[in-house]
Amino acid sequence: MAKIQHVCQVVSNEKFCPKFYRLCFAAEPIRRKVRPGQFVHIRAGEGLEPFLRRPFSVSRLPAGGHGAKKHVEILYEAVGPGTRILASKKKGDVLDVLGPLGTPFRMPPQGIKQVVMIAGGIGAAPFFMLSDALKGKGYNLILLYGGRSRGHVFNMREFKRQGCKVYTATDDGSVGVRGRVSVLFDKIKTAPAATFLYACGPRPMIASVQVFARRHNIGGQVSCEETMACGLGACLGCSVLTASGYKTVCCDGPVFDIDEVEIPLP
Amino acid sequence: MNLTVKIGKAEFANPVTVASGTFGCAQRYYNLDEIKGLGAITLKTVTLHARQGNPPPRIVETPSGMVNAIGIENPGADGFIEQKLPSLREIGVPLIISILGHTDKEFEILTEKFNALEGIHALELNLSCPNLGKKTLVAQDPKSTSRVVKLVKKASRLPVIAKLSPNVTDISVIARAAQDAGADAVSLVNTFAALVIDVKRKRPVLGNSSGGLSGPAIRPIAVYMVDRAAQAVSIPIIAMGGIMTAEDALQFILAGASMVAVGTANFINPRAPLEILAGIKKYMKENKLHDIQEIVGSVRA
Image (cartoon, rainbow over all chains, first blue to last red; front, side):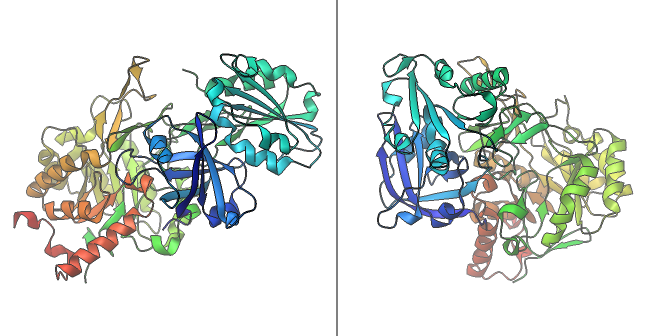
């Protein structure tokens, strides 16, 4: 019934770093349509627990190899009942996937020279695809990555291969600079008018990016998260407050302009 | 095989609809030819004036279900009629409009607004939303239920369905009040008032504090209530409450429902309503039934 519902086979499901997994599944119709920043909504189990689907940013469309032209990848951390079931999936297992859903990142406006991606933990997921779309276009690409600890830091070679300069911070200082990703904001040096930000990560991080962007008058976009049920704009459960009232993360987002959305902090 | 259901003077090709507030953006994501196969679509509740809804978080997952407190976010009657209704009408499936007035006067104005429009098959009165901060719901009091149903019936050219709350001592009393006031059908159950607490923060999880529980967690209670209501009224019952499969739907039909509404299941499986319809047909074939009416309420036969 839904044009966007697909039954997909798992191609691989491996540890990407001690805390993160990278799951690849075959979904040619999703791969054909998806743009950076959009997400897929996955039913992790077949029974009633967990009850709801789980949303994941599409992380990467892997290149080359046998059948790879169908492949779609997500990145996740096995922290809850849904993601723990996902971590147990093997090659050949079947997944019920809705997608691609939501709004993609828009490309940087004219005159932008420097693009800064700011990621907190698993929030780095959509930036693999985004940096792939931005490479070779003359932008000075930067990734600021903040992770909790060594276990949350992955090999940055895919970003570096796309010409990205990568800076890392960890809460405990075990890799890179000690502190939140905001301690890396001083790496953003170019004139604000020529800089564009993309941010994805926990709410306090998004809020700190908003403060920084406002202070320096830098434009950009943020990818938001909220507990989600349908993913299709039906239940209005994942609404966030924006300058123009409540909007759904699943349909109107997850990507919003940086100053459009008001981040609720605990 | 005859699956048609009559509610007042409205006729629906089959007994499967979707519950109010669970089926949006149909045009964007669904195969419209398939949607036409449903008996009806029941739309998200419309109020006279636009409502922005409750602060997030608005939903929380629970065992075999979820608690929601959306707060009837909607563009108001005029906004709905201008922005949403035209494309919904184009689908070519019967539409049931859910309305909620904060006063009797608002119910009257809403009824008149929809009276004037083409392509609407019935009005469902939301007498039972638990998320509006009201102390008592209309559907918690037989007198209020009777008063609202009467005034809408008087004004409406469309069949009128009263949507009832499960948060009552005896559902049959309320169902009877709706019938006696002239309702063409009752629909039950709305969500169960519920609360989930974040123990770490020592605060309710939802922005609205409490919400309404839906999903398979409530199903056996909902089946019980439909059974109780069916013993009290002779008007058709539209049943909802955690229907995920055809077997779930058939439980409600056997208990006395003429029509079933698939709600929360839409969030997990957008194909659920059509799979349920196909499953009901298969059951009828296997049991050599020619008319769905043969089994409505037959658990007591």
